Picture (spheres, rainbow, N blue to C red):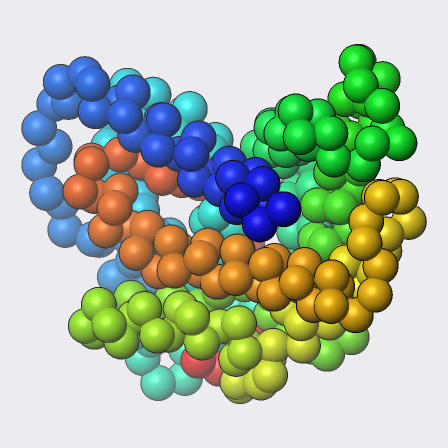
Length: 283
């Protein structure tokens, strides 16, 4: 059971690794280093009329113009969507956080992202091969049921962790990168996010969304996984596995810009103009 979950939940990382390998197989043109003008300009903008600044992007799209940029951006977009990269703001400048509507949009985008469907298909294939949930049967019908159950589990988890509990507790569901300091300090910061999150006003708080959201998703999953083991111990194992998986992705988010620049690849999608009318929070 543990090996199956590990293989299934690493699907997103495997896809990203394949994209990296494919891109690196071709000769990439040398890209001159450019001064990070956009983040610095954002940093010097003034917070007037209650407006705020959006977090600077982890990697700017114009940093790279080689092959597979849209493919790599597609696979990495969900990773960046829940990442905040705060620059050093001047006194009085505010960082935009998410309102209730924004959190719902985050949940919808994550749930309908192409990578989510690919991940569910991959997980369903592993479950089919291992005959997980035998009552689903085999063949196309069994695969379809497993796909629906896995996709429903991912959507349920995102509903609780991206929207429901963050709205109830006024919590920002995104990961705030440390971005500087030693590798060990940044690693600990990423692992700390399983326990410590940010409020909408920028203050630190216990990560209720991670623990309550994961627990709620595990409990609900029993309704569409008829062969799941019931009881306290199996539930604790599933909750622990999910939280460890989320911690791993937070570690990846912390070091993702360095990885992308190392391979000269754009680990983000095309940026759209961002309005500064979101909820401001002091950083």
